[in-house]
Length: 476
Image (cartoon, rainbow, N blue to C red):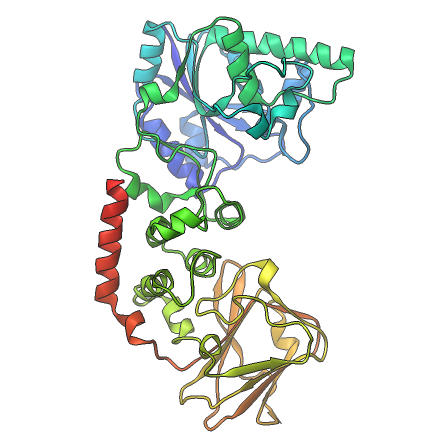
């Protein structure tokens, strides 16, 4: 019997590199391939990997040239919607492999894959995947199957982020997809079954033997379609067989963890049980901490908010502890803020940790004024968060009616596109006016004097709390 492990990639970054190394290490005993989707003309595989590994390049045009339908839901890559197309292309190119394991590039593997392939062969199993058992009414892709499968019967479906196939199963699915393509054109159907249905339903309807991934990998507590995990979290997932998805901390990571309410960092249960805070402590990222601190389920004031602030301040020597410069007086009514517009300030604009969400940004029109009224403590500092690198040409700062222009505010920290501009408040200052010379979008405004309340600076208490919370989460 011949076995292959195929690591499927469409772009290369640091998280893909990590997942590739893990997959490669756990593929001993099987031939290893990188299947790279070059549909968008990109090819960023590192040169050392290119020279050492077997690489199979594919494009969506290769699939449509075989006669497969090019239909899919708009806004996504053809192979994302039709993952089985890549399997067919590989099997046709390398027909000698009896059993194959396909691994998406956002999967972290911690179990020997060759051992599963051997058991699969011995037990005459054609497909291994993780079934999804929700009824059609709760499945977001149910409409994609209209016209192909009987809506009155159960449609098999599952997660195929990592999956195992016999050659005959791959070729059977390929033949059925060709038949579906003919049917689609003949009946003028606008729908097209998503691959997570076709790869499960077709083999089962053909009487092939399938098995749940959990049968071979019982530790799957972090294997789901979402939320994304950071590479730095993997150390806290010892004992898991497969983790998915594992990605860089990028825009998609933030969207899925702070706008999508599915076991994400801002989901209610995860926040209330302390799991979100534990994850943030392992990620150790300023934006993640800030977004979590300002999320709907973290109450202010409250224990979770205090503990998150303690975690941030534990970054000894990190620039972020310097730019925060103490508790935000605007958040605690020690400094008053007024504006010339009718709308109020957005939620979290004066938070102790800066806002990052576009939906809560503060829009200033030309000639709009924000007035800050003291008294200001000695050593006070103003910090403005914005994504605009030309903001220094768009603002004037007036102190007690005397314009100090913008020679004082300077960029003090840049993090993932957010620029923090700061300036020290002159001694005996009573009023500061921030005047917009052009339209501006601001994300945060702080006035701080370098001090934190005792409950925030009790780092020993914070560390003990993290340890206790971590122990409880691990036990669960």
